[in-house]
Length: 96
Image 1 (cartoon, helix red, strand yellow):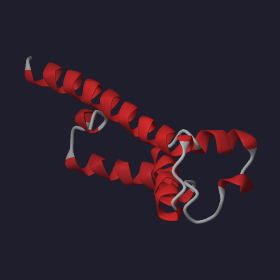
Image 2 (tube, rainbow, N blue to C red; image 1 turned 120 degrees about the vertical axis):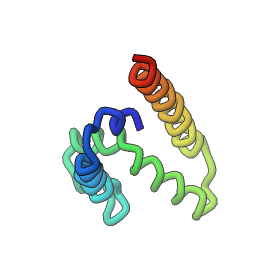
Image 3 (cartoon, rainbow, N blue to C red; image 1 turned 135 degrees about the vertical axis):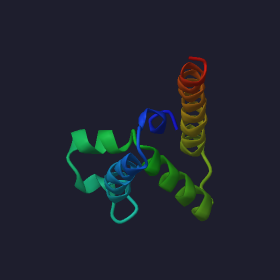
Image 4 (tube, rainbow, N blue to C red; image 1 turned 45 degrees about the vertical axis):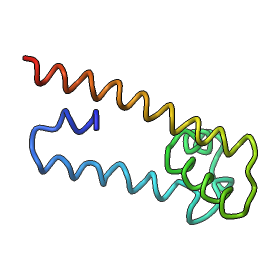
């Protein structure tokens, strides 16, 4: 939401798909991320799609451990950061 608040036209919303497609392709949903070089594997582990897929796999197979909670912690922290920056950006836009 914070990024979309910088868009000036509706057509710029198409840029979201440009970012989401590689995130989905490299998320480990189609094949394991171990096939990538180490630097790319590290980058993939920072993306939210990888965390979501790993969390769903843990729940599906019934393997709930600390790594599952680390994915939940990742999402909670992303939500808090997103709300902070979005609230700040929209407040600046509307209070001009």
